[in-house]
Image 1 (cartoon, rainbow, N blue to C red):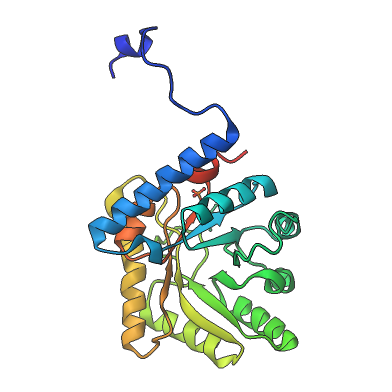
Image 2: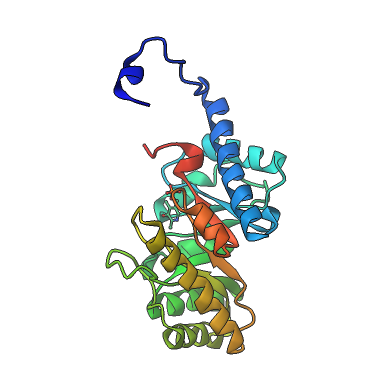
Length: 256
Ligand SMILES: *Cc1c(COP(=O)(O)O)cnc(C)c1O
């Protein structure tokens, strides 16, 4: 649109729905359409891709609303918490007992391992050895095994956690997890390169799949999951094999 027509008062009005609930449904359907189109391009079944709601800074009502919509659309879903201090708030009665798996996707501190272990069915963000050890201690105390993903820093950005994107480094981490006898490594997780350059994003997300495949070839067959793809790069992630996409702002709107 050029400058003149942008200023034209006769331009059609925005079609953005007015009510909060309608806007949530419209954004969510847009996200599902993006997932479906990418899955189709890759020859994948979109229903085998878990849509994880990244819930940081959202209210229990918003989260419950999105869960209802995803259920109606028969998607496989999970809820992902980032912040230990939001765990209790999001365990609101609206969420309790609805059977949606809760995961932890945020930076984990060893002194929060207990809180996180208590609720998270799957921890995505195991990014260093002392986190493996801290979670293993909680699992041993609770006498409950737990699935985890190993976080990989595929972009090399210093602000991001994760093991180096190197098969030997990751194999050592996978072994350390398995050797605890209480934690089971079931896949890899990454946060894609923070850039609009699609080639760079694809290189970072594609490397996670190649690393998982390499580890599987080395006999670590339990590594099934690839947790990757967020609001800005979920199509590329699905094309590159994501089994879990973690979506926040594209569903809930800009973070407050
Ligand atoms: C916030 C967050 C997401 C979702 O980010 P959006 O860009 O809002 O979709 C995904 N993964 C992690 C680890 C996050 O912290």
